[in-house]
Amino acid sequence: MGHGRYIAPPKGQYQVQSGEKLELQYVILPGESRDLEITVDLAGPGAQAQVKVLYLCRADEKVRIRVVMHHLAPECHSTQLINGIAGGQADVRFDGTIVVAPGAQKTEAYQENHNIVLTQEAKVVTKPQLEIYADDVKCSHGATVGQLNADELFYMRSRGIPESEARTLQMLSFLSPVIPAGREEEIESAVRSL
Amino acid sequence: MDKLLEIRNLHARIGDKEILKGIDLDILPGQVHAVMGPNGAGKSTLSAVLTGRPDYEVTEGSILYKGQDLLALSPEERAWAGIFLSFQYPIEIPGVTITAFMKAAVNARLKAQGKPEMKTGDFLKLMKEKMALVQMKPEFSKREVNVGFSGGEKKRNEIFQMALLEPALSILDETDSGLDVDALKIVADGVNTLRSPEKSAIIITHYHKLLEYVQPDVVHVLKAGRIVKTGGRELIDAIETKGFDQF
Image: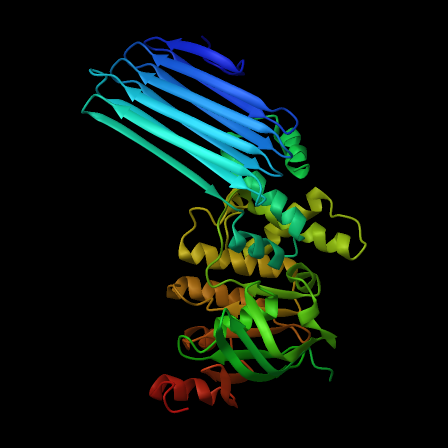
């Protein structure tokens, strides 16, 4: 159980104890259909976890992301941010569950999943769930599936940025909260390949 | 003198709604034109059509810019040709810094003109110089475009971009809305500094305040999709005292 950020294996079960912080970061690039299944148990008071996922897919690729965040002890903190872009006929599904056990008071748990579909044929299903059995908690989740913002695109083009370049910039802008430090160029070239 | 812009019988609509119903407008190099009118007159539609915003359809008429058919150009081609719009509501672009944004804009134009990209050092120096013009603090260069900016900061950012791109035709769409007097003066000073015998501007507003600081050569009153009156600065006073109903 590290304190640093690292690329974790696609299936994992993690126990985070009191005073520890787990940081998981996943990058799924085009060409690698992936099935992520992550379970985190926040087992000791004050334990913290952060999960970030970036996915990019195209053609007939499949991406499955499942995250179960168990708040088992009081005063634990968790954040999840899953942002991705689906092109081609890609098929994406996100299932995210936050479970707050009885007695896990003062829990703070946040989950966000934002998706952009580039084509009519790409498909994204997102299913965020909250199961809360304690009464003194702060929890929120948000999920969006949308297209590239037309106003942003026009703003950039009006400054002379060609449409294709503007779309790339927009996608990088959308992904920026989940791009790991040091991998900017790799992600940029993957975005250009969509 | 050759006209910079020549609008003839321009009709435009968005969806099924006809908004511009026959606009004629000529602009010479170096001229500043004010287009004034009540809400819903079609002022923003005019700026949208000039800059090629999708969703607006020109149904009749023509626009010549430097003698060429403007309506045949994409928004980015219009920018390369020297047209700039200061947005009424500047757009936020999270994750993209002002430096990255403007560098992409400047280099795209150079590339389109078949010229080499600007060196980063030269670009940063130019940026700093132009930011000073609208009193933007240097640290803004690292901020994400318009994210968390106040209304005044957003408008100053627009004028900074205008200064950097040095357009031949600037369109200022309600640039004065939401500005306090201090911000208004900074914006006006920026615009005045950029005036030259070659550069023209269209100032769209329903408010006389900016026009006290940036004095137009020609004033047009736009109402219900048509220019109903054209004159000099005396029109600004007439509007201020009696409103738009007199036209």
